[in-house]
Amino acid sequence: MKILTAEQLLEVDRQTLIDQQISSLELMERAASSVVEAILKDLINSPKRIFSIVCGRGNNGGDGLAIARLLMLAGESVKVYLLDAGQYSKDNEANQKRFIRDIISLFYLDNIPDFSDNEIIIDCMFGTGLSRPLAQEYDQIIHRINTHPNLIFSVDMPSGLLADQISDPYARVVKPTKIYTFQTPKMALLLPGHHDFTNSFEVLDIRLEASALDAQISTSFYVDQQVATDLVKPRQRYAHKGSFGHVLLIGGSYGKVGAMVLSSLAAMRSGCGLCTAYLPRCGYATLQTAIPEVMVLTDPGEEVITIFPDVESYTVVGVGIGMGRDPRTQQAFAEFMTTLPADVKLVLDADALNNLASEDVLLSHLPPNTILTPHPKELERLIGKWSDDFDKIERVKIFSSTYKVIVLVKGANSMIVSPDGRLYFNSTGNAGMATAGSGDVLTGILTSLLGQGYEPLEAALLGVYLHGAAGDQAKQKRGEEGLIASDIAHCFSSALQEIKRSEFL
Image 1 (cartoon, rainbow, N blue to C red):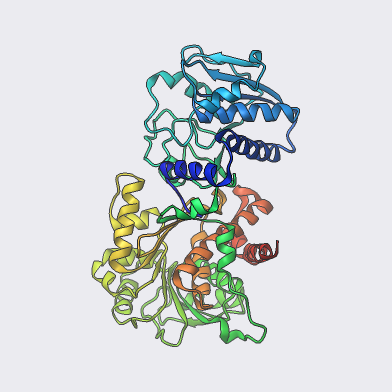
Image 2: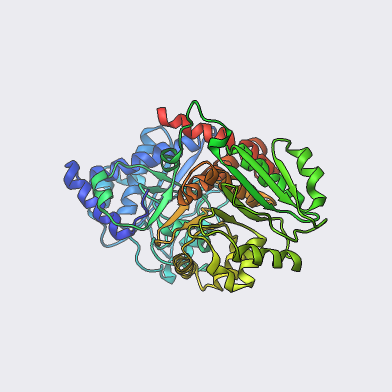
């Protein structure tokens, strides 16, 4: 799914009206219907509620008025608050006329509505079309909404958040419980710096014209279930274990052998034919006992890796899991990188990235399309500090292009950057996955998929999606607080089967 700018979406709307021969008011009704359906689905088990819908003067306010009317037709209790303005958009005015006038309460910015604590607020003041930060006169209404103790929903965008720009953390922006946005996610919804404003969002399909969407040029994409489904390779009936690759995982140190257990488990659960783990001698019994399906090779060192094995006989190599930064390990890693065959398939994580960052000369030895999986601090060591999320994106794009590598920046909506400058944001995952070992599981998955014949970018896109989807299934079983990394590994198979089933729906 493409991520489009506000200007591009405006053009898609315009073309949709022409191609589908509908009016803008009809498209607004379609959008409002999708929001009402989504809200009622989300609240299906909630007790009786009252909706307070706060509408602005433009088309986002028109959406709100249409939503209010449709909620009332569905039997819901609704209050409508419309900003008093000298002028409204055409479709906003049209939706006002569909109400009995007394139902709409006008409000002024210096005399804002008084919501009761049991009401659910639906924010429809400003949408994607907002082009500048809100003025100080909006302080009262934004503060009143943000301090509301009940649910807050925003339609299209949280009012005050700019779709294509960085918003200051202290900007006047609604902080909703959930956002219902139309057709494509907006870049602003995916940036870590906006985390206060984008707790959760859902993309609603309002059937904008497919050809108009296809005509828009974008280098930013959203990896959803359809993308993942299209990537999955079917297994052949007469395949054997050699058909799905022999992966090698290198890592571990005294006290961090569990990281190798998690990564090896994830590699096997995600489908590789054979997996060998190489780690210090102290980890042999632990790993061999924990996962009997994995073969184990040990380093001469008792507690740390002191020499790297020959990797030419393996399909793909994953390095860094729990490896540590002992000087002997750092020296062994440097020798490994400088003697690496140019055609080796490689995944680097954790201390492999830290060692890489500490010796810039090693970057020139990275094989093309190596997958790097830094968390934000590891990324900072590789590319330096950034001023904001857009600066970070540009720095990662330059790094990826310079060294011809794929960079997977871990976090909410994990971002994948390919050497040609394309950006991919993941749609799965939850805050419960911010737990020790989650990244080790991801490294095992990525290494396994590469071993099974997926191209590096395919492996990165599918791997991060399924990692998040497995985490979402684990959340359903354990809750966010109780989720641990091994839950993700154990849920991988069912997450994969779910998207395989979706092919036939």
